[in-house]
Image (cartoon, rainbow, N blue to C red):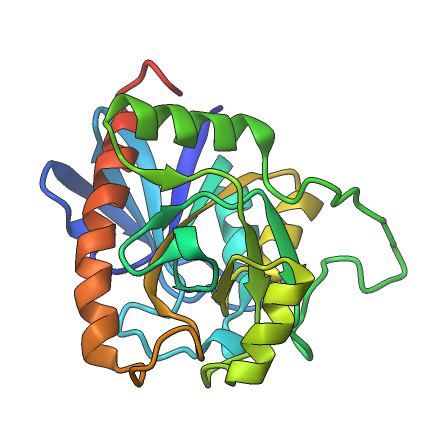
Amino acid sequence: MGMYAIIGGTGLEQMDGVEEVQRHLLETPFGKPSSSLIEVIFEGKQVLFLSRHGEDHSIPPHKINYRANLWALKEFGVESVVGVAAVGGITAATGPGQVVIPDQIIDYTWGREHTFFDGPEVEHIDFTTPYCKVLRESLLSAATADNVDVVSVATYGATQGPRLESAAEIRRMEQDGCDIVGMTGMPEAALAREIGLCYGCCAVSANWAAGKSEREITMEEINENLKEGMEGVRALLRQLFRGTLV
């Protein structure tokens, strides 16, 4: 599977046992990535971390330069990308703290730079299966090996943000077949496919989506649930990079 990268944040690059080697500031034909590429040694593997929202978490979802992020990773030699994301749970199995490895996605975003093929060169990628099958199987195997409870079949609904959704919007998304809702899943997945990166998503449910709980959604609740869910993600990633499953 070659070199791996993790797009996310949430302190992943500061995990115990992760040795930082170097930071790389890259320029791309599409501008600057959200952050420097942090090269680390993780479970004996060379891995890159990229902070999707910037190292100070100052870039909102609709302003992320997704094209520059993916292009920089490709230029550095990355072949496989794990996108770690906080999401809201819509269906019963995806409640707060749950780790989800989605297999499908629906794009509700608008106005984002969503393709590398703006012309004159045009290519129509096959997006029937939006996530790399090989990487998904590796993530699921890693979860099983470390006894991390994951939802293995789920549809990610990608919304524009930065606001959270209305209860009516979530009802519509559930009718469309969405299990989780997030703001960064697209165009990240499609751009990765366009340039031949094997891309998988590892999502953490940070809260019930709008209308799925009688309580108001608060950042305190989101942060608390993320702490719980990220423990599972860290365990899963450690197992992924130990060598036998890569």
